[in-house]
Length: 268
Image (tube, rainbow, N blue to C red; front, side, top):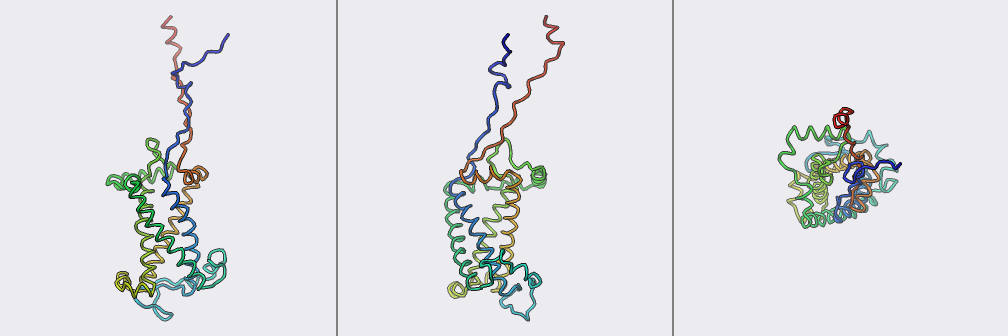
């Protein structure tokens, strides 16, 4: 006797296949991987430059006998670690060359990415923060979802969640531009061409301090970003940033509705 089969329209007969969404456009993917290399080199070379004078000040001037708002000399052994700096040994000239070269990559890369994102509407479609999204209730719900490792909206899996949007907006429109312009303000050549730039930040040493704070924000962003990538599934997340396509996990088919024993007896 043949085994009974489920009807064609039964949920048991329709396995739910994984859904593939197009999540990252080409400009975003290219800029992401260029930035991954650029930020890594700039952090290492920046620490190499900081080692020349690991104290930070506010104002125009700063030297050994001036009051520093941050003194990193107690951490000099860590800051001079070969695995942390570029180059591995202390060499201020080489650190500056690496830093300035990739500062150009960072600045022009950001410019091209912004133009491309305006053309393909990436900013408006994916990163625009609505007023309702920054309400306390919505932010709290988004934070709780992150704590549950629930990072995607099943109704719109390609969408960025609110905390993700805010992090990207701060990094793209605040931290990276701050690093670029404070870096320019510390350049003697730029000071001669644009003297208003150094005044904008309140002096060379203030620009250096803001540069350090913005760079620290980028380091924090990278740490949180990598942590969430690992928690969300590193293979799928990295693959989506290579191909642009992200695969949702296959959902199990719904359970068939339970039928009570009384129903067939009543029908007989």
